[in-house]
Image (cartoon, rainbow, N blue to C red; front, side, top):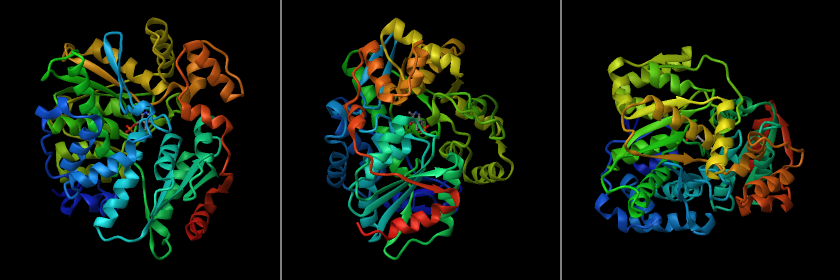
Length: 488
Ligand SMILES: *Cc1c(COP(=O)(O)O)cnc(C)c1O
C-alpha cells in the first residue's frame, strides 16, 4: 500500500518511506491510499499486543507481522504499569479509557515508546544508514515521552528544547533526569513558540554532519499516528467482553484534543471497520476546533490562552489537514493550507462540513468548568481526573445535553494524563492549598484521594539531574551542531 501527500496525490511513498520522511516534500502529511479492513471477527480472541500488530501490519504493509511483533514487544513489554496499555474504567454512566500508565504518565507514551523502533526499522528498510537525530520543541508532554522512547535506542540521538519556566515542575524533572547517553535537554530563554520556531529554523537551515539526518517526533508522522489506532479496538473489545455492549453496537469516543492526532486515530479505526458512533473533539479555551466544527471556518487569528490543560493549548491542529484531505480532496486542501499560512484562516464548503459533522462533533470547556468537573467527579464517583481528562468529561456532558443523536450509544472518554502530572491544578480544583514543594503536594493528593502515585513519578524525587543546559533563542542552532558532534 502507498501513502500520498494531503496536498498532492502524485507524491507517493511506501509506508517505511513515509515514516522516515515524516512530512511530505510539499509540506503535506501522508495518508494511506486505502483503509484496510480489520478482521473484526477475530477481535475478541486477540490480546492488546496482537491488536497492535494486526493494525500496524495492515497499515504498514511493507513490514512483516513477525518484524512488527518484535518491535511492538520491544516498545511495550515492561514499559506500562501492570502491562496494561489502555485499561477501561466505569465511571458513572460512562467509561474512561486511561492511556497514561506508561513511563511519562501521558498518552503520548503509547506512540512514542514504539516510534523509535518503527523509525529505525523503517530507515533500514529504505537503505538509510544515517544515524537519526530527533529535534523536538516541547511544552511538556511530548518532550518527556520522546526522551523516554528514544533514550538508549541504537542509531538515534535526541535533542529536546523546552521554554525555561514554561513547563510544569514535574514535566521539567521528567526531562532533566533522563539518563540516556544519546539524549540532550536544553532550556531556552523564551516561550514555546520561540522554541518551536527555533527548531523549524534549524530543520530548514542547518545541515547535519555526514552520516546523520534530522527527524522529528511530532504527531504529523504516520508512525506516531498508527500505534494510537489500536487502543480504540482494545476499548471496544473490553466493552464487549465485560458485557457492557453487544458485538456490533456503536461506541462514541470523546477525545481531549490539541493537534488532532489522537482523535484522528479514532477515525482511522472507524475507517478500518470499528463500529464507532460519534467522535467528539474536546477543547479548552483555545477552541479553534470547536468553532471549526460549528462554522466550517478555521480561524487561528485569535487570542492564545494558557490553561490548566497545557497540552491542548494549540491554535494550529496539524492533523486536521488529514481529515480535510479525506473529505475535501487534495486540491482544496492545498488551497486551504495556503490560506491558513498566508491569512491565518480558511473556510470549507457547506457540503464538506456536513460530511464531517456526520462523524465528528465538538465542545469546549473553560477553566472554571474544568476545575468544577474535577471536583464533582471526585466527590460523586471517587474518580480523580487530570485537567485534560476533565475537559473531556465536561465536553461529553455538554455534547450529550445538546445532541439528540447517538445518545443511546455508549460513550468512552479518553483520559490522556495522570492527575499527578498536573498535581497543582488538581489540588486547587479540590479546594486545597498548594505549596512550593511539588512532591509534598503529590503526597498530599495521594493522601486525599487514595489514588496511588505512579511509580515512575515518585521515583523522580530522588533521581539525578543530568541536564542543566540553558541557551538563548539565537544559540539553539549552535547548541544542536555541538551536540551532533559529540561521540556517544
Ligand atoms: C498531547 C496531549 C493531548 C492532545 O492530543 P492530540 O493528539 O495532540 O490531539 C491531550 N492530552 C494530553 C495530556 C496530551 O499530552
